[in-house]
Every structure is written in C-alpha cells, then in structure tokens.
Image 1 (cartoon, rainbow, N blue to C red):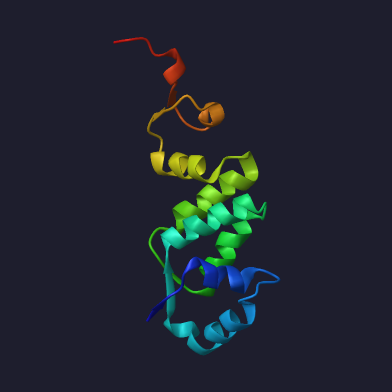
Image 2 (image 1 turned 180 degrees about the vertical axis):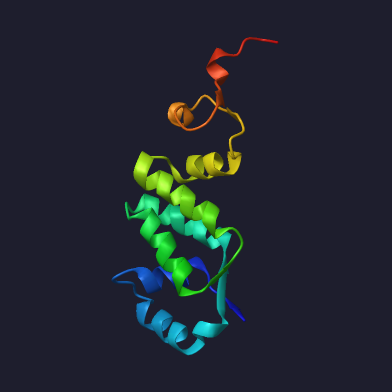
Length: 125
C-alpha cells in the first residue's frame, strides 16, 4: 500500500499543477494501492479555505478518489460549516467534535450552533 500525501492529492484535483502529470500517472497505475488519512483531509480543508476553493467539494472529491483511513464524516461536516456558515476550518472541526457539549470560548462564531461558555463574561470563581 502507498500513502497519498497532500501535494499528490492537490496535484490531482487542481486544474493546473506542475506535478499534475506525474500524479495522474501514479494514480492511474496504483489507484488500488493508495490510501490517505483524515489528517490529509484536514490539511486539504485548510488549503482549500486559504485558496478560497469550495471546501466541501474538495473534501468530497478527494474522499471519492481513494480510501481514507479515519473519520471522513467529521471533516466533511466541518467543510459544510465552512461553506454554509463562514466558519474557519478549525472552528468548524471544534464544533463538529463538540457533539453538543458546551464550547468554552470567547469566539461568537459558535453562538447559534452550540452551547457556549463565553470567557468574556466569566468572573473569578
């Protein structure tokens, strides 16, 4: 088996990439031997966000290309929060992982999506 890293996957999904031809050749010849991890998906989520790409589409497309070991659903759900509600990737991941628990943060982004303990309103206990 071969572990696909972020630069390989970016070369496959970008319209133009200097590694595109090589990545396509490797994919064509080793498709059934390739896998990646949820951490690569998180890195791709960050890159897509930074490059103002459709994060949900990027994660969905990559997950369809090869086996992903780990929690794909969490990353895909986070990508949806990025696209639909303007979350940053890590805020979206925290929200999804919180699973309804109270988020301790001063960040108002979570306000309509999860219970929040606002650090700005906490007095010394």
